[in-house]
Image 1 (tube, one colour):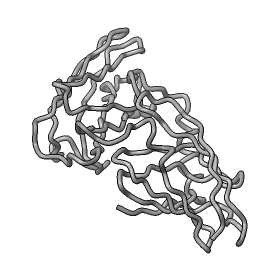
Image 2 (cartoon, helix red, strand yellow; image 1 turned 180 degrees about the vertical axis):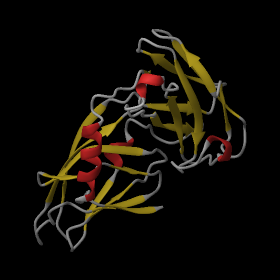
Image 3 (cartoon, helix red, strand yellow; image 1 turned 180 degrees about the horizontal axis):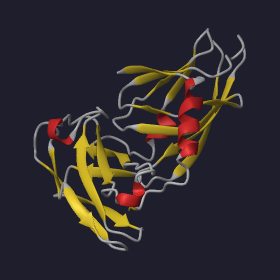
Length: 240
């Protein structure tokens, strides 16, 4: 697998303005984690959804395999999630249960899926005609981890192979069977957009400022572990 990571351009400002306009709005539903790991020996895993608001909340949940636009009725994944629709009372929690159907998945590497939880906005009342309603949606990573994989997920970030190309781009290869997610990536102090490197895959990162020819690249980054924690790392990548 290969991909290219690029620095966000000016179009990002438009989205930032839109988000700033809605900054007063807040989700009343919160999740208990930022990622989930389904190990092959698990009968099921649970996802906790809590309502921290003052009114009941209606949620819809589903799993997709990478298509963020896929609707619940059109996804095809080897997992069952129950209940798909739930009413969560104010100050209460709802447990979602995810079970693997046993359909074939790769046994030599992790597979990536996404858990979606949509907070359905309540029906507007008469005096709400001039208000904007927002539907908040969580889309969180879920890794299916087969039994017997070599090494460990914790050790995988240090095993990434970094190579500096003549044009200043960085090629990052992952020789491990684990997904590695990187955040706060800096090359010679210049920020690079966060990215992930799939198992046994390669991506190309383009720093906002090209590395000068003949100059080594000093790379600092943080990997995200199974619990959502950030682990710092640093590398020196020799010039070609």
